[in-house]
Image 1 (tube, rainbow, N blue to C red):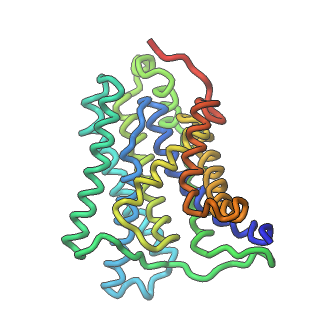
Image 2 (cartoon, helix red, strand yellow):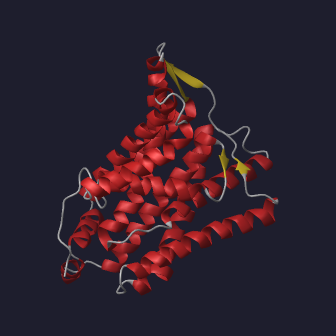
Image 3 (cartoon, rainbow, N blue to C red):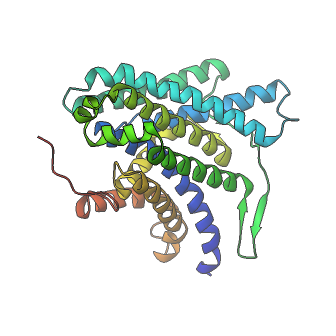
Length: 317
């Protein structure tokens, strides 16, 4: 029966959706302040996955991973990946985006696409030299699964992904709403000129935005590698596009919208992958789930371009 697999499909969809949601936060934070799409963000996610995997592989090669508490190993891996990807995001903003801040919007967009391809090739080149391959299998820290009654099981690694994703999203929400820097970020998103007149350092706020967004993206890359095991330099491209789709679905520039859009897209993609084949008599299989995801993007742009939680605004002149 098709309904028998529904609980497991929902578990898989939530796991994927929370990863989309955290990556989508990076897109929506940058757009909310600078009003341009940082298409290199998907590759920052990919760098985080490789950094985390290399940390675990090196630790394992040194013989230190076997006796280490898996939570400690995951914490250290996340910390290192977040530091490196956060610094990478700040460097990209300083070198590739800040000099183009006054240029037409198409110019920094092209720069972002160029950075995206540069990061792909740098990782591929580095891994080819270091390991003579760029498809890596990450050591999995958490094995086994937890039964959810008699209807489904949730892998321990998937539960870790969901819990940490929720922690990151809640922490970001509290930071944006409760801290001085969070208020400054909201002020800059509203009006950069007025914010600067009120002694807010706009450059520092933008730098902090890239630092936080890139750190979250890098951490999600580590969680992705833990959940799926195998990574390559191209994982950031499709996942980044889907996270962007999630941000548009929820309302680009809206933090809450990015969260809801990511989870919703993950559930829809998981449901389509599981049920599209049986419901269409085999005409469309699970391989069409990506088509389904991007069809949602087209429909949203056609009928509700501001997204589920976004507000229609007039172009500034």
